[in-house]
Image (cartoon, rainbow, N blue to C red; front, side):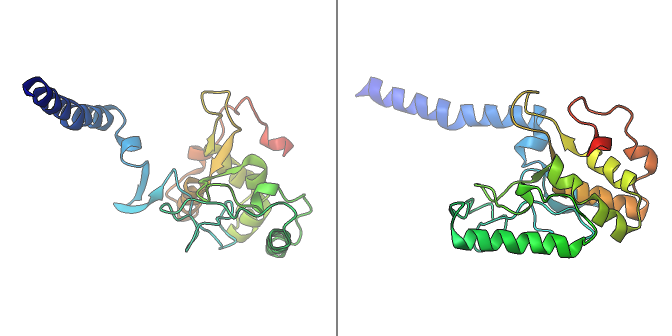
Length: 209
């Protein structure tokens, strides 16, 4: 019994106390922002996280993907999709309504509506939107904020996230960080020099979008 009890106590201390403290300590020293949820603050106030999206319906902001989580959009405690198939009548009706909303918000926009602007993701928590989804909204945001389209595009480019390790996934734009920058630019906290593209990313040329 003695070896068994000693082994139990030793493994409990090692894996239940020492190891968690070691990993937590390393995370707080070298990856503090990520370990604490990649939180975003403005003037000491918690705004949100880089990792979980937020609903935006004001047309002067960049809109993200729709969220099917319950009982509210982007519910981090209930990650889920709608589970509707592409031929489901309710799904098609929802997509048609979302397309109509986009068209009504920017009637002069003749571009094709990107699919991720009218469909929800499997997680319902996506903090990013595709490049096509973001640049589709440039004219609306520029018009409502009284900015040039080039300025809005520069703010979008500032918030582009490259492919994971350079090869996995597609480039995307963080919606919350972009909207914070839009507000900061409109209020004067962010200057033109802060958003001027000095070198365009290799994977895209916004002037062609």
